[in-house]
Length: 81
Image 1 (tube, rainbow, N blue to C red):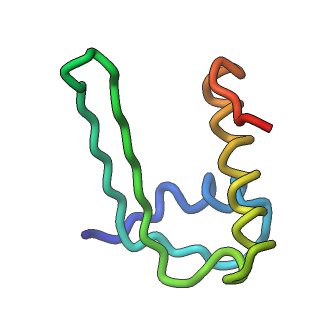
Image 2 (image 1 turned 180 degrees about the vertical axis):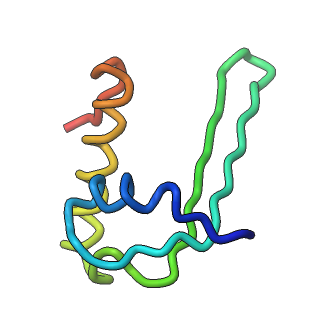
Image 3 (image 1 turned 180 degrees about the horizontal axis):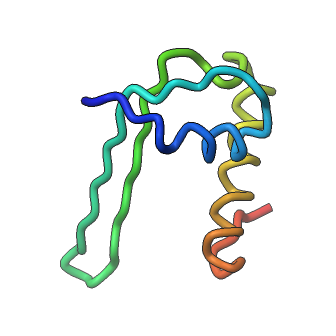
């Protein structure tokens, strides 16, 4: 994996917290299943955690993720409550 700083600003905005978030690498996979469904998976590797390793940190990260998904898709894709 290569180091990328292009996504750091967007990552900080997504998380909503200032600080250092150095991206170590990025991985993306896409494919189509036999039934026609499209699957997509993206992963980012960071040098340091962006949230604390706890339930509240995970919840915060999850909310930030779904906010971004809703923004990018124009709310076509939304988190279930």
